[in-house]
Image (cartoon, rainbow, N blue to C red; front, side, top):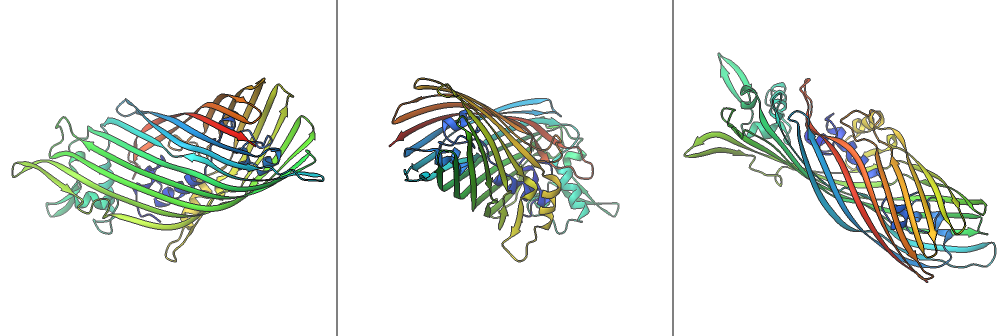
Length: 497
């Protein structure tokens, strides 16, 4: 369990202790969004009852039984991510943007015709992206009512400058950002920013990369084109890399003795695990398909590395130059590495689709996921995750994801559209918790007897609040409201044989 007070601002939630950040890490590793083939994305991911798609297999493995020909398929994904931050204290709006390019999907499907009532017994190996963490953020504003040094100061005073957190207030103490003096026989702790009446410029940047990918082996059977049953074994792999710089400065030289300080953080998560999916599709009448699938919890082992360092620049000349104090170990010398395990929540997916002959398809899915079922366990005998698991039960909630899709056909040309809404994972929908997310999508494709190509555009939107530093003893919060928009383009090419 990482011993960092700043952990809770890393992933856009308010500070509620070290356990809050570790719980948020577990949440990030448990979430799925709409990535995959262009067809799957274009129809909002509403594919549990449709099947016949390399990404649909990853939602409901029974959909593999729809195939009557073998297939190889690959999807490339281009993404453009933009953020707009509003610093309410200083009324400053800052835009930022970044791009991505990745393999979103690969599938190799084998369709094997069989004699008897089980007409096809099919097998597949697929790779599907489940989440992309890519994001970049920048915010700047002038704060006239508080400073991160207030938080440092209060923690140092409460602990009498002993047993300090080496990733947070201890950095401020060792670099003289918080100092002490004896006045009239009394020991007094102070900061230059509080004594100077605030007005410092606050600036934060962060850069996040990584994602979650599932590698699946699936089998499925087709019983008389009426019942389709399937299962898959899934290897889930996640990589999360976070770097951030928080700075407070005095560009107008209005705070005596203070120039600027800079806090740098680095977080790396690597996680791998295994789970299973079971599913069924039924066709009570030819045009109607009804589906149900369950995703078992995935057990993942996590390697967590966190480090922090602080540099403090004084507005005081020593030997002709500004005095400078640094945490001499740097991030590399002030890092904590922890190994633990998480169990992701159970999921249930239900869906239905209506096949409109040669004209097209309409489909809908509902996915239930209970984030309170996330569980963290220690891989070491001296670490206890009871507090983290209690936080998960109290702060997270069960929620639902809704997905809708439509497809229209005009000969060899196909046109698609979709919509998805992902429920918020937090029970209390306050400003400082991640909100629900929506995704709109549209696409087109060309199909021939042996070859197909599909292109899709989608837009994912959500909003969060980035907390610069946490409240402590009723301090005012400093942070920025963040609107996040991700525009994605998928290109899928497939060959049937």
